[in-house]
Amino acid sequence: MENDAFFKNTVSAKGQLRDGDNIRYNLQRDSKLKVLFVGNSITLHGVCESIGWNHECGMAASRAENDYVHPVINDLRKRY
Image (cartoon, rainbow, N blue to C red; front, side, top):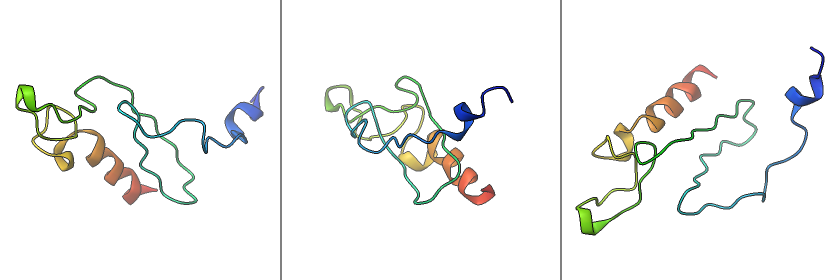
């Protein structure tokens, strides 16, 4: 490739962003694979009792294990 440095990603992301309302990390030490999920409330929605939402997961699921992000992460862990 013309720009191998782009794919090597030698700059650590540690400490660049912290967990917050819109950012969650699911880290596995020494992982070779890095995946970014970008989305809206289908990806992640915090607890909002005023609308009856008492979970912290994607709003298409009744709990975190059932939203689309968590099964994808689990499958990637099995494969890689």
